[in-house]
Image (tube, rainbow, N blue to C red; front, side, top):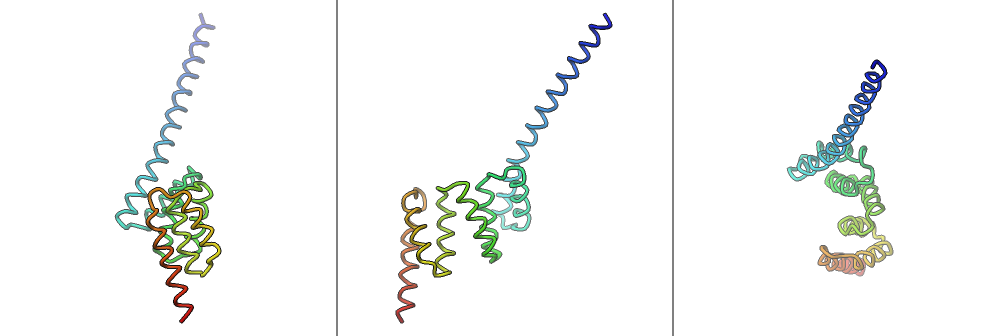
Length: 153
Protein backbone atom coordinates (compact mmCIF):
# COMPACT_ATOMS: atom_id res chain seq x y z
CA UNK A 1 0.00 0.00 0.00
CA UNK A 2 2.84 2.41 0.82
CA UNK A 3 4.39 1.55 -2.53
CA UNK A 4 1.13 2.41 -4.31
CA UNK A 5 0.87 5.80 -2.56
CA UNK A 6 4.44 6.69 -3.58
CA UNK A 7 3.71 5.77 -7.21
CA UNK A 8 0.47 7.74 -7.17
CA UNK A 9 2.24 10.73 -5.68
CA UNK A 10 4.97 10.56 -8.36
CA UNK A 11 2.34 10.24 -11.08
CA UNK A 12 0.37 13.22 -9.79
CA UNK A 13 3.58 15.25 -9.53
CA UNK A 14 4.48 14.44 -13.18
CA UNK A 15 0.99 15.36 -14.36
CA UNK A 16 1.10 18.63 -12.42
CA UNK A 17 4.53 19.45 -13.84
CA UNK A 18 3.41 18.66 -17.39
CA UNK A 19 0.31 20.83 -17.09
CA UNK A 20 2.37 23.65 -15.58
CA UNK A 21 4.86 23.52 -18.46
CA UNK A 22 2.08 23.53 -21.06
CA UNK A 23 0.46 26.56 -19.43
CA UNK A 24 3.81 28.31 -19.13
CA UNK A 25 4.65 27.90 -22.83
CA UNK A 26 1.12 28.84 -23.87
CA UNK A 27 1.45 32.01 -21.82
CA UNK A 28 4.79 32.86 -23.42
CA UNK A 29 3.30 32.33 -26.87
CA UNK A 30 0.37 34.59 -26.06
CA UNK A 31 2.61 37.30 -24.61
CA UNK A 32 4.79 37.30 -27.74
CA UNK A 33 1.77 37.97 -29.93
CA UNK A 34 0.52 40.46 -27.40
CA UNK A 35 3.81 42.43 -27.61
CA UNK A 36 3.47 42.79 -31.37
CA UNK A 37 -0.21 43.73 -31.33
CA UNK A 38 0.27 46.23 -28.51
CA UNK A 39 3.33 47.71 -30.25
CA UNK A 40 1.36 48.05 -33.48
CA UNK A 41 -1.46 49.89 -31.67
CA UNK A 42 1.06 52.25 -30.09
CA UNK A 43 2.67 52.84 -33.49
CA UNK A 44 -0.69 53.68 -35.03
CA UNK A 45 -1.32 56.23 -32.27
CA UNK A 46 2.13 57.72 -32.96
CA UNK A 47 3.56 56.64 -29.62
CA UNK A 48 6.82 55.68 -31.30
CA UNK A 49 9.09 55.40 -28.29
CA UNK A 50 6.90 52.87 -26.47
CA UNK A 51 6.10 50.97 -29.65
CA UNK A 52 9.82 50.73 -30.46
CA UNK A 53 10.45 49.19 -27.04
CA UNK A 54 7.69 46.61 -27.53
CA UNK A 55 8.78 45.73 -31.08
CA UNK A 56 12.31 45.17 -29.77
CA UNK A 57 10.91 43.07 -26.95
CA UNK A 58 8.89 41.02 -29.44
CA UNK A 59 12.07 40.40 -31.43
CA UNK A 60 13.73 39.12 -28.27
CA UNK A 61 11.08 36.42 -27.97
CA UNK A 62 10.56 35.92 -31.71
CA UNK A 63 13.69 36.93 -33.66
CA UNK A 64 12.20 35.79 -36.97
CA UNK A 65 9.23 38.18 -36.87
CA UNK A 66 9.80 40.21 -40.05
CA UNK A 67 6.91 42.57 -39.27
CA UNK A 68 8.58 43.78 -36.07
CA UNK A 69 11.72 44.68 -38.00
CA UNK A 70 9.63 46.48 -40.63
CA UNK A 71 7.86 48.58 -38.01
CA UNK A 72 11.18 49.37 -36.34
CA UNK A 73 12.47 50.54 -39.73
CA UNK A 74 9.45 52.84 -40.04
CA UNK A 75 10.12 54.25 -36.58
CA UNK A 76 13.78 54.85 -37.41
CA UNK A 77 12.69 56.57 -40.65
CA UNK A 78 10.54 58.94 -38.58
CA UNK A 79 13.48 59.49 -36.22
CA UNK A 80 15.69 60.09 -39.30
CA UNK A 81 18.10 57.34 -38.25
CA UNK A 82 18.88 56.00 -41.73
CA UNK A 83 21.50 53.52 -40.57
CA UNK A 84 19.06 51.73 -38.23
CA UNK A 85 16.24 52.04 -40.74
CA UNK A 86 18.32 50.35 -43.42
CA UNK A 87 19.54 47.64 -41.03
CA UNK A 88 15.96 46.75 -40.07
CA UNK A 89 14.77 46.83 -43.69
CA UNK A 90 17.57 44.48 -44.72
CA UNK A 91 16.65 42.13 -41.86
CA UNK A 92 12.99 42.26 -42.93
CA UNK A 93 13.94 41.33 -46.49
CA UNK A 94 16.25 38.58 -45.26
CA UNK A 95 13.40 37.04 -43.25
CA UNK A 96 10.70 37.80 -45.83
CA UNK A 97 12.20 38.28 -49.31
CA UNK A 98 8.78 39.10 -50.76
CA UNK A 99 8.01 41.98 -48.40
CA UNK A 100 7.00 44.69 -50.86
CA UNK A 101 6.95 47.52 -48.36
CA UNK A 102 10.48 46.82 -47.12
CA UNK A 103 11.82 46.68 -50.68
CA UNK A 104 10.03 49.92 -51.56
CA UNK A 105 11.41 51.72 -48.48
CA UNK A 106 14.90 50.43 -49.24
CA UNK A 107 14.60 51.74 -52.81
CA UNK A 108 13.80 55.18 -51.35
CA UNK A 109 16.97 55.10 -49.27
CA UNK A 110 19.07 54.07 -52.27
CA UNK A 111 17.56 56.82 -54.45
CA UNK A 112 18.55 59.39 -51.81
CA UNK A 113 22.08 57.95 -51.93
CA UNK A 114 22.06 58.06 -55.75
CA UNK A 115 22.80 54.34 -55.80
CA UNK A 116 20.92 53.73 -59.03
CA UNK A 117 22.39 50.28 -59.69
CA UNK A 118 20.93 49.09 -56.39
CA UNK A 119 17.60 50.82 -57.11
CA UNK A 120 17.34 49.11 -60.52
CA UNK A 121 18.09 45.71 -58.93
CA UNK A 122 15.54 46.27 -56.14
CA UNK A 123 12.99 47.57 -58.65
CA UNK A 124 13.27 44.40 -60.77
CA UNK A 125 12.73 42.30 -57.64
CA UNK A 126 9.86 44.55 -56.57
CA UNK A 127 8.16 44.27 -59.97
CA UNK A 128 8.40 40.49 -59.92
CA UNK A 129 6.72 40.13 -56.51
CA UNK A 130 4.40 43.12 -56.17
CA UNK A 131 0.74 42.47 -55.55
CA UNK A 132 -0.42 45.34 -53.34
CA UNK A 133 2.07 48.13 -53.92
CA UNK A 134 2.47 47.88 -57.71
CA UNK A 135 1.35 51.50 -58.27
CA UNK A 136 4.43 52.59 -56.31
CA UNK A 137 6.62 51.54 -59.27
CA UNK A 138 5.56 54.68 -61.12
CA UNK A 139 6.60 56.84 -58.15
CA UNK A 140 10.04 55.20 -58.17
CA UNK A 141 10.29 55.81 -61.94
CA UNK A 142 9.27 59.43 -61.36
CA UNK A 143 11.91 59.91 -58.67
CA UNK A 144 14.57 58.44 -60.95
CA UNK A 145 13.40 60.66 -63.82
CA UNK A 146 13.39 63.77 -61.60
CA UNK A 147 16.90 62.98 -60.42
CA UNK A 148 18.10 62.63 -64.03
CA UNK A 149 16.61 66.00 -64.98
CA UNK A 150 18.24 67.68 -61.97
CA UNK A 151 21.61 66.31 -63.05
CA UNK A 152 21.16 67.54 -66.64
CA UNK A 153 20.61 71.16 -65.56
